[in-house]
Length: 148
Image (cartoon, rainbow, N blue to C red; front, top):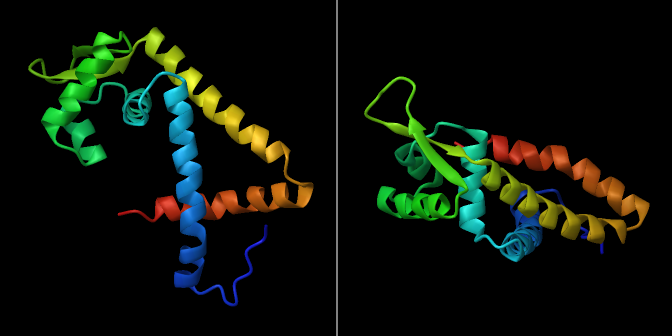
């Protein structure tokens, strides 16, 4: 299905693009749950993997949630054996977070579930549609880079 817009005006493009992005995002979150992890815990685990040593407060700020809420999520990840706390390199009063090997395996399982779901659907598209998707990657990444 090709969406034809009468103009590339940003509001019309946003109106056409938003529902598709939301549906894809929802399905990818569901794939994380099929791997045995809530979408939020998968997000937090991924953040810790990308920024080893990050503290709970910084993580809460980055994800725009309260520190007590983030702390409870981190405790759940610790209890699962996916995250550990380590002394902060510069401040002995603080601790940072790191993903354990078990957490890294869980994160890989989530990525694999998501990639498998997406690849199975992409494989059903005709080559022109795949080319269109490939061409859309750079502009979509640019949208994310424009965030404040």
